[in-house]
Amino acid sequence: MRLNILFCASEMTPFAKTGGLADVAAALPKHLARLGHKVMVVLPRYYIIDKSKLTFVKGNIGVDMGPLGTLWAGAFKSEYEGIEVYFIDYERYFGRANLYTDDNGFSYPDNDQRFIFFSKAALELARSIGFVPDIVHANDWHTAAQPILLNTKLRSDPYFARTASVYTIHNLQHQGVFSKEAFAYLGIEAKHFNPLEMEALGALNLMKGAIYHADKITTVSKKYAQEIQTPEFGFGLDAHIKAHAYKLYGILNGVDYEEWNPATDPYIAQNYDVEDLSGKKVCKRDLQRIFGLEERQDIPLIGYVGRFAQQKGIELIAGALHDMAHLGVQMVFLGSGEKWAEGFFSDVASYYPNIGTYIGYSNELAHKIEAGSDLFLMPSIFEPCGLNQIYSLRYGTLPIVRAVGGLDDTIENFDPLTKSGDGFKFYDATKEALFGTVKWAVDTWMGDKEGVAAMIDTAMRQRFSWERSAKEYEKVYCDALEVL
Image (tube, rainbow, N blue to C red; front, side, top):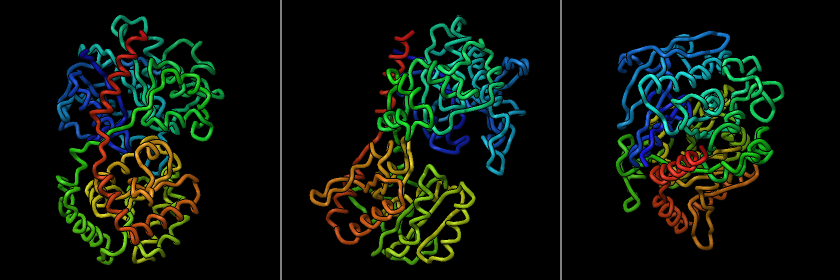
């Protein structure tokens, strides 16, 4: 069955990115198209996206925003990897330097208007160009209004009469909670503002509404699909999600091995693969030079690439860092986020000669860290899927992870007796557990060359392909259509 799929997201590589959602939005539509489906991706046209490089789409899009009246947007078009990508252009909402927050890290106060508007505009854009979607695939709270609208106001609209909705939760922590006044922007009947659907302690919770109204729900790993039904990981929605678990699927994100492949990676100092690892030593020397570290092959180099955020376990790393620094290792950190963390990791890099820090993000440097590191640190408090641990496997860089979400699904703990496994896992969210596992990994790297070689071989042969994930989403789409 060839499906028309309207895929809506708030970010997409290479146009605008703050996290893993952007990578999913770039990869999944491409692989769905390879299965024979017609995919249309819609994004906001943020200020950082140069419209001079886009094609103007004729006509205006009228968006009914309730008390704000009808707002008129424009649209642009581009192409990425054979996929048509459309951009909603409305300067008042999207002509800003950042995607979601101001320069001080505070959420824009009109984010409710911005993304309810975007959700509606994407649907109206499909109508205006004659694209009748079989599936609307909405992602995270930014497009949560779409399943709500499709199951309420638009259910009687002939244009969307046979359209099913699939809603993916990439990160349950951010739910799109706003004052109850924001409900009016949806333009649906007041009866839907109730605790079973989208009311949460008197406020509007867009993600809660999407979970209720979507025909199918997915999240980005099987373990995370289980975790979000518990109080520890449910962020207040665990009971709500459990009530809708009958339509919940856990589908592990894939990896774009066309980009993340040490045999062909243009960013790294020398290419290598599982059959010939000599290039990895060259990449390690290159990484040591970049960060001003002593060029040594006899000690392990531990890498970190990610946001400096509580979710990523950055507080655990900070708490254990001084002890880790005295293990006879080198460490490099690439990231940005919470200001205290940026300052802390900058300071320790100036204090310890065996630690290097780069504040910000560099795609090229991220590739170099994956290739040049021996071990990769990912001690997340929660992790819906995670991608860097999968990149690390492909590059023969053994992950040290907390056994949550996709990290638990993708990493097999090392067994020193059988020499099986491809990484090191710990369970308690404490600095002591992190340090103990790092020490175990370092001791293994230094003292069990046979075990490390076996792990690297196992790791580099692992494949978590988008082809597999796309086929699983295809099945969910077909199941969603049967619900109608």
